[in-house]
Image 1 (cartoon, rainbow, N blue to C red):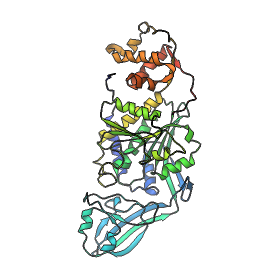
Image 2: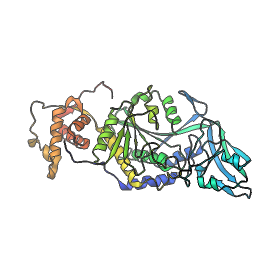
Image 3: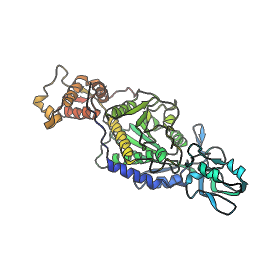
Image 4: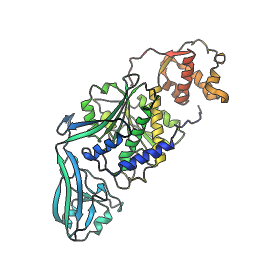
Length: 445
């Protein structure tokens, strides 16, 4: 059935505000632990009422252990004239994240053994980490490395790696039920905008919208701002009692670049979150791509591990590691676009609206069609510009509201946007032509 595309409402002002938040957080040197992550979460507290959690180093979390805390004050490479030829103060990507402290003089050959570059992009700085194996190193442009003459170099990494804590932020917005929708993003990378801060910004502004005055939430919403991998593993290990309440979930990552939207399905593949996002993307009328689950990528792979098998998918624009700027200094403020952030925000919000508005009803006049005209329902739905779509929404609802079809089922089968189906259902409820179906014991399979 051919229908008119109904795109999510994109708020350009929100896109501008999210880009400004990214610019505010961009200079902070973050990692999976440490003061940079704490400072990032403290900044977010000015936007949303986060609860900050600290989990001690050495804590056993599933098959992992919370690592020691890493902090860094300064780092550089100086030539024999005392000039900083590599300077952490110019870019926090210059140091391999989690480098152990070092202070020594080395030859050019030894220095090169600890340097990382991108020969294919000679003016970009790569991002490298050594979270779980003690090492040290510098990242620099290939041009910088090639220009270094044979000399003696002073290398200093003024860092600490000591017992401390893993930090993460959490916000729970209670709803009409204890059934939960999880929104998760990683907040652990240093100065990279798309693969890190875009998800943080979109999650923050989704939370701001949903906690706004007058917002009616059927589900309880849980937002997590965590370090990648170890953060979701730590949260899962400490929240076994909460996990059964999570009915739907969405990981937000790389949602600020100019690419088309991509959605990676949950492990289940046909969960309501998978259907809701696909439905919203279809009705934008713009190119998009849906992808099957793979156990590789962002934190969805932890939430979808077989011992939990949560219905959690991942929304991105250009997918994980599929753009050249990924994990480099080129993932900067110019790479993320306010209009892309706004579109990702609107799409995620529309998908959450489908999940929160989905319900199952029973037609109270199932023998033949009820007379809608005398109830003024066509005018209620269509107004002065009565449309064929609004009439069809009413008729599809009355035909399929048998207690076994949800509103999302009806939207998918009819080809109509969920928003129109939901609006028509509300009108039929007012006239008592629909009533809520008895609660089902069937889970989201």
